[in-house]
Image (cartoon, rainbow, N blue to C red; front, side, top):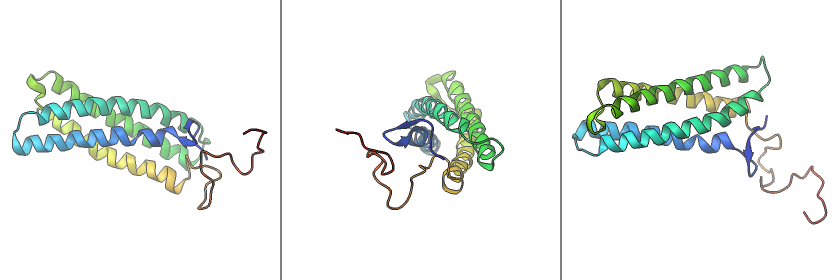
Length: 167
């Protein structure tokens, strides 16, 4: 089942998810470094990285929702996709809660509640990321109908489609 939202022959959602996932994970790493070293700057870096990750997650989620709408009803893929998507909404809500708590603090200082939100958020992101992998790897969601080890380049016309003069 191919992605509904594509750019240059590839699904947009899987292209975009690497950015928010990487940014949110990096924010947690900055928090850990800040807690271990108490060096100023890491808490600020965590907050800015987290903010950009949240925005990126919202954008990626729009394209994920478009793809999810194309999954046939009553299938395991539709159910897994719903848990994946709703789980990621919770992930973004946890990170947003963490970000707003930091915003209210002096110098983006993360208090315990902010850290708990981001640590739980990244743990849940591991689970929802696995579910996303399940959708693609096991259930074939977002995979081209022409996929195979010898499939043509996605930028070329399909072998099955007639070529027009000059194309």
